[in-house]
Image 1 (tube, rainbow, N blue to C red):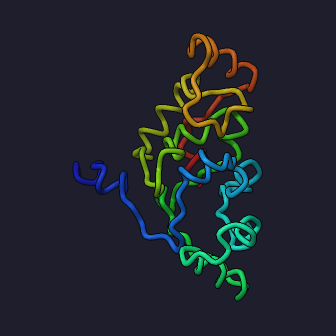
Image 2 (image 1 turned 120 degrees about the vertical axis):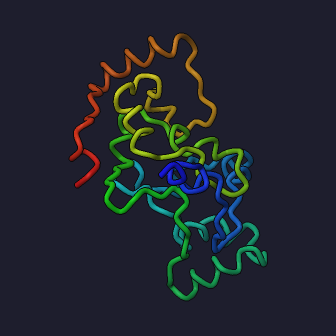
Length: 185
């Protein structure tokens, strides 16, 4: 039973083969692309969404448009088929998670996904277990940030994190549920 709680069993640190060698460091840091550009439904839907070939080609029809690294993107785009991204952050099928509820209530991308701006290939950095999630639901203040800092990697509050968290919890009317039905539907 202890093995199922190990980072290996939980998928932490696992590097998955993706259809495109997408370097988040380059796109986030060098190009300044906000998470919400590629993950366009993160504020409006349970799923954050994954970038389509159309989204990639918005830039790559002009930049690196002949690169062999982007052959899969061009093929998917011209054939009108989706890119087959591999899910990195996996929750069991019996768990319901809504990205929009979290990001619209002050939980930053970095809280669950780690410093994506430092990853050549994204990997899971948190256990995403029920206990880990309940820890945040029971004490969300330490993870709250201003809404204009949701996608900011490495963001730190200017003053006391506890004081800011309490202020934001009140402003956002944060009362996360710890009832089973909140995640198990």
